Image (cartoon, rainbow, N blue to C red; front, side):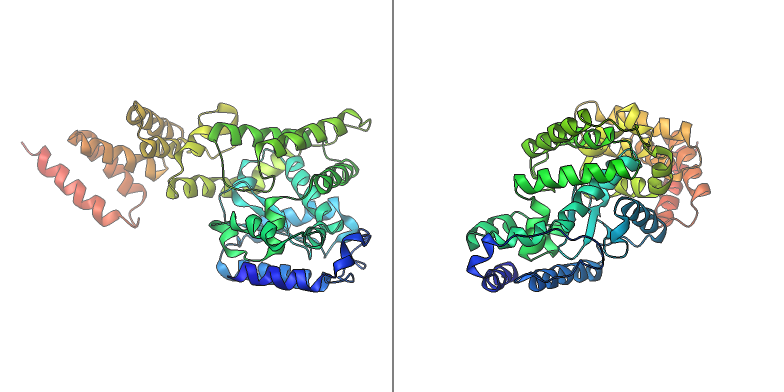
Length: 384
């Protein structure tokens, strides 16, 4: 197994006395290079994982969004411009991680759930601080046994975790020691304040994530590993906020919304395709959350109710699709959903109206030929 082989190599290149070696943070981009015992191997594995992700198609190709995130990273870490890079992984889970050579990945699922730029800056500041303080290297350096890393690596299955086979990426994704997390909290918070962001959003982002973990009973591994670890982040940032006496800073909600509107819709579609309706329902049934999604988002809410299929969900789905039509009458898929529903009920007149509208709006849709066949069936049943 690739993971085990890399673990053996990494543990072999780190000398027995390395655990007592002081690890100083990088001071700027010019100093950020592997110079400690075995650090070059750790960086090389991080670079290999980055290339594996790029080749896998799991990295989002969106130049405008990439430039937006990179600008935030360089606002927070100006002296590391060019070294700290940001990428978006096409993964719907709540995750972000920093590889040891300075590439920070934030999953589409996490980015779609944030509320403003200050929250995104919080994540980037936290993950960038892990890089600056060499936490990925230190995780490997402090390894006590191969089995300890094997357990960590073994929980990363599916999605981006299934592609990253190295101990470097595994430890980055599954969380650091409490001391490392607290250091990243403190350093990231200071960066957030100096960059002029609203520091109150640092705790808000983790409260948002903790709420989702609890509401959706999320058990998959992600970058803060568990609800208790999330609560530690909340407590840590609330203490830092309480001791902050600077100006409030900006949240950047409008800027963030404009930069991520397309991604949020893609997240909704991905959750439907993955058969995860509960997350969509959790988000879109909350008016405050719904306001951050496209005007036709009720279509996805209807799809989520249809997929969940609990008592009353058929009626909820229909109501959501009708709301989508009312709010965005030119969004074709809402009409299709209502047309199929009417067809199942043998409400031929309603089916004709809805399917006809769908084909008028999307004549070249991938299923247009099937819908025309359905429409012909409807017309047959409407004949006197």
